[in-house]
Length: 120
Image (cartoon, rainbow, N blue to C red; front, side):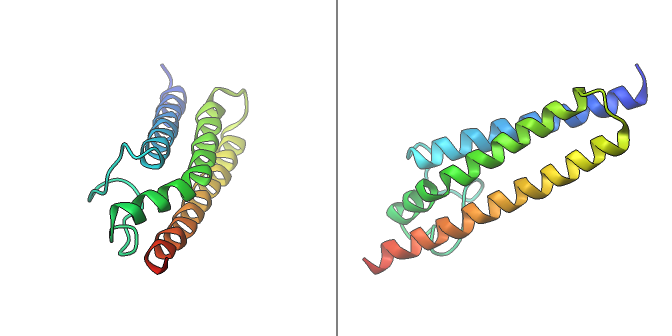
């Protein structure tokens, strides 16, 4: 097996695993199955303040996080495409920036939702 094929396989597995983890976390946290914890989820002072704030944040962040999972899934399929390494690199970089932007957006809107629960 060539080094290039191994690298593409590893990239694919990592991105598909990232997609699965983001999908699971978004659904579990928004559905109330992922409780406040120190490892996974949006962990800020406002989201950790109460169970209500945690749930509000993750319900609001679910869509952007699911979108990030979708992008990660598509990037995970990209190594199977018959494209050169430069094109694959561009897809992975653009996809990674999109994933990061969507996750940060989810955290920002989630944080706003969590803060709104304490002012109600």
